[in-house]
Image (cartoon, rainbow, N blue to C red; front, side, top):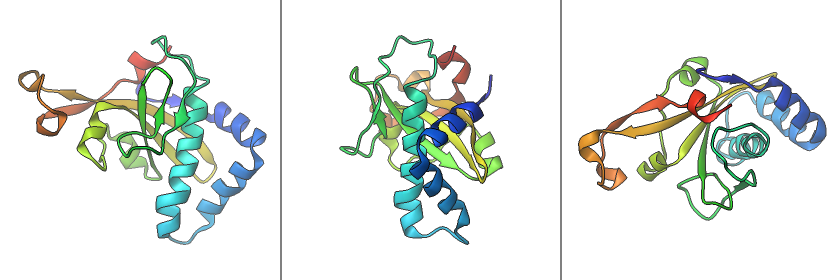
Length: 159
């Protein structure tokens, strides 16, 4: 499983949250992204829906599904009461979404599980999980010094 269809979840979430649906539509009505849309609206839209997903999807791990947005750090976007961290990355580009690699704002974000979301005009219909896999010879080093590769872990994460 490279990605999952979250169309039903998006439809349910946007029906229950009319303001969210309006703001999502507002984003796609823009002729070009603005600083406000890039640094406020897009994170709000993707992280809010990601929080809903993390609290409703079925995971192979026995995580407490009490994820909340975390504004106290740049290292991740969501955290639960057990300290499980999720960084949310969204894109409107099909080719960007298909890639496994992620451009992180800061290198230490590689320590978190990354949720990739594909935002389309009609809604968010696809998502996947990726993780940074550290090369064996770098185990034990600070993440900033490690080399490795991004791998898709959707199948290992979801039931």
